[in-house]
Length: 290
Image: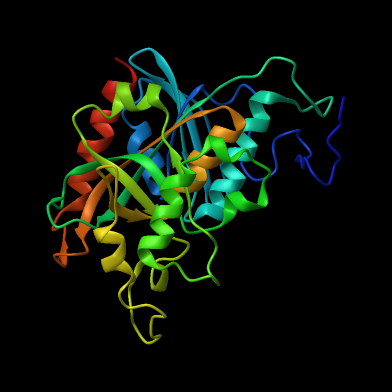
């Protein structure tokens, strides 16, 4: 049985996992992840009870109960690099014996739902509505650092996307991963859904041009016009592809729901996106605990 060395599975002096500063038992099996650390308390204020709070850097965790069901809400910060930390450490908390430093014989599958903000890439998707990510499309390249079976992911769709957009060879090859059927059916019913593009930056990678010129000023147009078997790219954000990819590889159920706070095609921005976020949180909490 492989033992994880101190330099690979890093623990704090109290035995907690390195970045999240959590011990096994301090998280629920249903976890809501958000980017903004201030959004953790905004969500946990709905809880009936809060049993545990901890913060380390941008990672804030509250675990408690809502309508009698145990939930954890955790902030990840921005980007797929942080998702790499969060998903691997959450998995370690439930699937590695931290005392013995070996993988547990019986594996636990977590439900991890990301609630985020996003910009729509289709003119018909209105600002201040919600989009559920049926697929995560990764521009980040993170998953290529792990060994994986191509059959787990939507390789034909990714190839078609690269061909349609004339994807530059110097960029990481895009990958596409499907959301959990189980979570999608229970939480995303009735919502606009499609392919969510995960960019590895907020400005250039999402087609925003300030003082630096873009390498391909027409990339967003190509992304918007992409179609594969009736599927289209609905929105841009910065975490979903890594969440879906790592979740699938590790055996967890994942789903992203985003509040649309901008429409990139129509150049519109929400006048009160905090109210949209509040509506999203309340709806997801109710569906998750129904």
